[in-house]
Image (tube, rainbow, N blue to C red; front, side, top):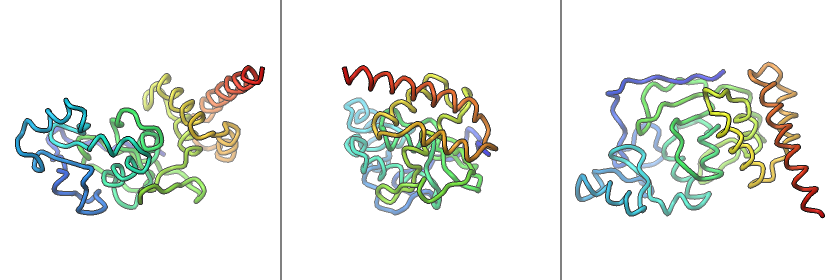
Length: 218
């Protein structure tokens, strides 16, 4: 079951210098806000120089931290709500980098109505065996294999088809994810929604990678 929390456009955004309940500690040097800078235009200037990637109008994270897996784990660990497991595109960003996700996706039975840095919090509540969860810099997130599986299960409305396919292929290539393992996970959870769609995607990707491996051997 997936739930997307809604929020008012006037919801208060958390500041990097005044951590909200989602922050894991009070010392978050990888996150910066206007309060940490000498003037209101400093954030835009730093963003223009590529030193900071903005999360919203007044908050961002230092670009140098996003260049490594550990650094991205630190950034996301100070953004997601406590006692949750980052999943879907949130976990994929940590594993792969790229554009910061538009929503914060976590495994949780709770509902979060307050946005985090202007982003809604989407919760997914599914069985999560211990082997499906990894930990990076204190952040709990779904493993590359489980992240691949969960993304394949999303609808076009949740993740557009092209983006979904690109994320699945990138995870498989970067972390040597075996599509057959994802297919086994889906086979053991037939009650999950969109399993037919996910199987088609994973089988087509598996076929493409098999053809690529065969061509590479010649």
